[in-house]
Image (tube, rainbow, N blue to C red; front, top):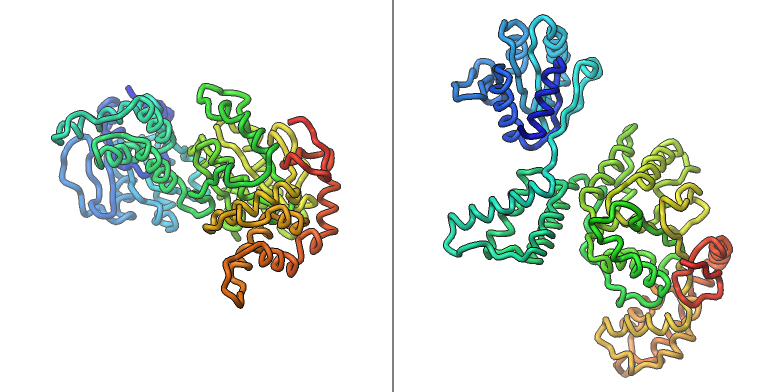
Length: 502
């Protein structure tokens, strides 16, 4: 007996009149109840608005005269036959008071004549007057052994219908595919396995990457959390030596699937706007070699009471199911601020996030960024919820030199043709984003002689631009003062923060 069948039998024997199942696997649900009906010697019926009422243990003609919701419920209320009645996609009809009353009367009569009502839909919100009469049941997701069995089943099936022999796959690719299919339904896992094999009769690293993206598309439909395809390499980011070394030391422990405790949990990147915090968050995922998910607090908030927290819980569940992965929350202070007019919502969101941060056991590495420390709740940065707090200050001269080289090279220009030392000196007080914009602006600037971009043109562009350190001097000094002795400097060279051991 499968675990699902065992749990359903226990539920049926607990005398619960209404069972709620949120699932897109109708066929699997009907198969389970057909087997259950035979096992407990109880008739089982399915109802749809298209076919009416029909037995599911064996082939019978549907009773199409009972296709209307009110008619089938009235029939069930007066029938002398006990049994299991599975109502498929009944959720649109739960707004009708007549339907709700009929469901309630059937459920209340369970003691005299057991009739179990099973409501199956992709989403179910039960009316308050029926909640005390109902219980929710969730189909189990396939575990790793079941997924490996599905892979072998689909490989055998492909071999039987094809002419190319056995499916080609290494043990590593099989294990990676199985790991990446955890967290989705059996039918979806089977379909993705079939698609991976169908292209070339093999399971390759490329197939595993495609499955990762397809799995994300299945799990997240609300737009609250997005899959970021651009995961930068650490080589594309100048400076941040302390952060890079910290990540490298934790790469293997994070990727170890056997490590159940004390795996790296996450970091908070605090710093000036344009300093490279977002690029660093992307690079963490690239260095770990795992998917990068971005949580959008702007899409998270909803005008209806309770929906915002529900959206956050769904987003965090998606991240857990995508593990191992990096969850990037940009400008986290905007989503958890508690000093605004939406303080109640902000506190509930913060509470939900803090609980997840402290209690999660999945390999989800949190990479959060923040600009405004005054809006950061103290409990958010407590050790145990995050591993370390890094301060991303304005880049020192050596890092500015490297930033110029990177952005010139990305635009097809040879850094060796430029005086990088002069450019680094002239760009004191600029962020990485400011330096990039100076290169872009210089490329677009009109030149009387149409000569190629050179050092002098870049110096002229820098001279005509106010650096961030001048525009936001007060805010920058306040940020540095707070970060001193509280954070680890992300850059190896800095005179504004005190190095702490990492």
